[in-house]
Length: 101
Image (tube, rainbow, N blue to C red; front, side, top):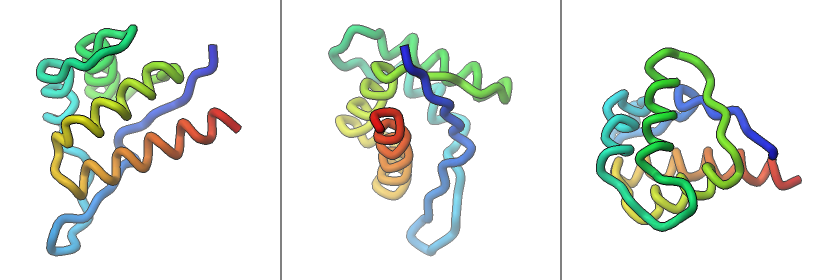
């Protein structure tokens, strides 16, 4: 199975004043506990996997199925507001497209 390296610290977005920001630590923690959509992989487990690797500063490897689930969840919920949502969705979509080449 193909996997991809996903580093949330690479995701940068701009607020309304143009200040560049990174994703907040709290995002991934809340993500696993509050969002549930259909799929073969429990989103709470995926959120936990990402959160624990992010907090320990280790790089997480996600499968194509995990990335698809994450992209769909972000599209459905838009947890972070438009700038952060768009930045993260574009980042993940680009990583997924690179896998499919």
